Image 1 (cartoon, helix red, strand yellow):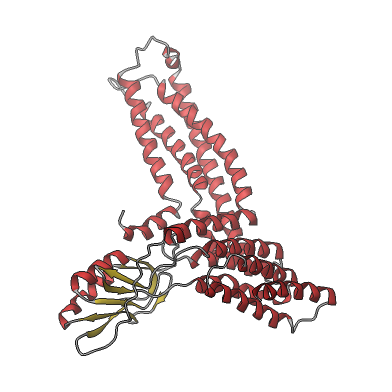
Image 2: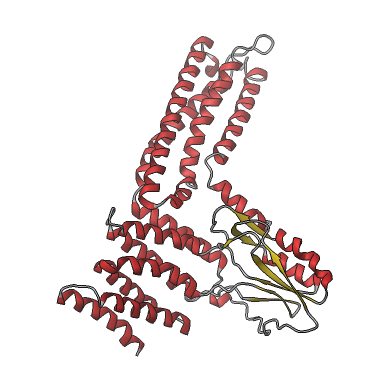
Length: 436
């Protein structure tokens, strides 16, 4: 699959129209099939299903009208409930979390089921007005309509339960955590699967044999995706080196330098437009190539929970638990290489993404916000202690020690009881002593 389609697919999945639209199309196809069967094959059926045709057309028409009216009413109620849930989620967890609720396939299927049943009944209701030679007695069609109605009732019960569950903080946090883990699994291979071929080539140096020119951003927006494979192939074919100055998730201002090309002649300046074609922009960030996207979502939930208006430290503690698990999982991952080779020749230099970048995005703002909340601070120290036991590099080790030192400096200025300060110092010493 073309990588450039990933942002479009992600946008489609987070919409309320795509799945219901497919179900509407299927309902029309199902109506056409059942009508065809009833009209051409089963009007004179005297076999095992003959009883299906022992119906009164006027009664069936009345039943279909009742079902259609009930379905459109239930659909309106379901949409109203959905809007209420989105409003509550936006105010409690943050507006950026609305995307996660809109991506919920359960809600999309429920809404699609109600609309599809309504339209199926309307089509059959209109078809009952056919005159000879296309008049018919409904058998299969009314049976399918009743089955769809029963299924709709079941989905209504499921929908009420699902909405009650989805608004709970622990469920929301776990959904974001699972999405983050899924994205990390795709973006970062395990250390045991690491490709040992490293680009140890020295950075590009200016000399009289290379012509350097810049590629400017055509407009402002978030960089959603970088097609590195296509850029690598382009650089190899053009015999030049492309250096990117931004990574996925960064906001780029129009006419900002987004890349630098080192070519052997001015002729390669024509590839500027080709480079822009392999960079996908958008009005918002997406998790396609941005591992910090879901991290920031968890951080936002924690920060809102720590705000004076909400004051819910338990939600913040849950977020810290999930972030800790994510960072521990990253300790044995291979991060994308900064330099990429083609045929042993350096062709592409990307903006480096490190463990520290993601870890600081996860912990810095929560650490700054929880200065006056000892329970959350202690939880952060516990998380750092667990992370210290799984570190595999000096970079990861230094991050834990730096965060611990900053927490220690912050809490030294706070007023607290001797017992609380003892609990705090005990956890700090567990980390520092383990380091020694």
